[in-house]
Length: 212
Image (cartoon, rainbow, N blue to C red):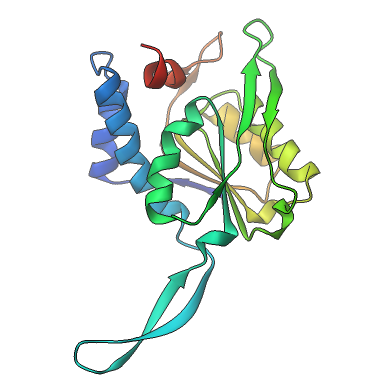
């Protein structure tokens, strides 16, 4: 798929393995999701908005410099698990704004229901929107979030979805509904089971980040 990027790097693989491990406690899980978030951020921000500047080196030579326009970037974590990736991105984007989208999942129908929307009024003014969600499983929560963003007037080509684990069902749903949205994922797993969980996956990322 043209708009799908799967990270290929031993540093990524190491953190994915630690996240998969059921013996990783809450401290280890949080540490690994943060470290993986740094690697995801490097890839996701390859086309971040910038402007050209100049600096003078200690050799008294003027040199070109690139400055990130991070104030023009909006991070949109999908609650709860998306919060686990926010710190990694803010390390590189200290002036970025953060808007929270809360989705609850009906465990029988697997449908997503919106319960929080803190998008700013000027959301269409941002040059890049990065949706953060460690698990792209059915894709229902992410598609619902993209519908909210679209309804707020955001052009689809400005949006990226960043996740740690994904399966083809979620990816295909986004591609069918929002073909201009780019997806960056650390890994593509083979199975979406009958209760909507990624396998082998890492279990419930929200629970492992905040509850267990």
